[in-house]
Amino acid sequence: MKRWFPAPALSFVLFVVWILLNQSVAAGTLLLGLILAVVVPVLTRSLRPANAVVRRPLVMLRLGAHVIYDLLISARDVARLLLTHRTEDIASHFVTVPLDMRDPSGLAVLAMIFCLTPGTAWAELSRDRSQLRVHMFDLRDDQAFINMVKSRYERPLMEIFGS
Image 1 (cartoon, rainbow, N blue to C red):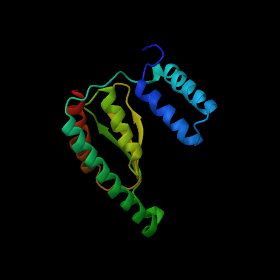
Image 2: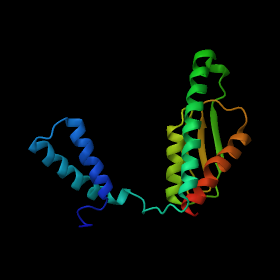
Image 3: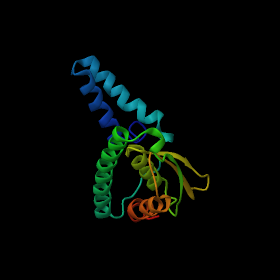
Image 4: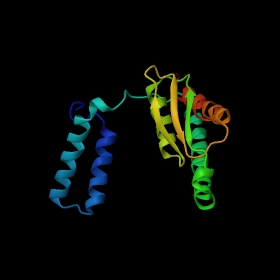
């Protein structure tokens, strides 16, 4: 069973999304959805990280709330800057953040946070996973940003994933 369904949740989501995208429950649509739900997880098995164990679910909820809040604030700030400032007045540059976390699952979540947050982009992770390079749309205080990343994101992720 594990051979054909290495990621049952992914298979289920793929099947449901396929049905929703096609807006049909015809036999052909169901059959093709089932084929995709089996084949895609099998072919992408090596691309998925090892199963993560969440050790502190309440910390995860708190982190989620912080991320949602930060996304909203960042979207507002980026929109304000785009509408009210000239390009040359925006302090866009790269920042290198030293990391203590090495857990692949924690780093993957951190990458998602930066990719989702308007005005930030994950640029590079050093080979030894000790430094993260982030591009910032507008940043005036690099050290304050580094401190925020370490306390608001990295520390909770280390608690959640136990790294």
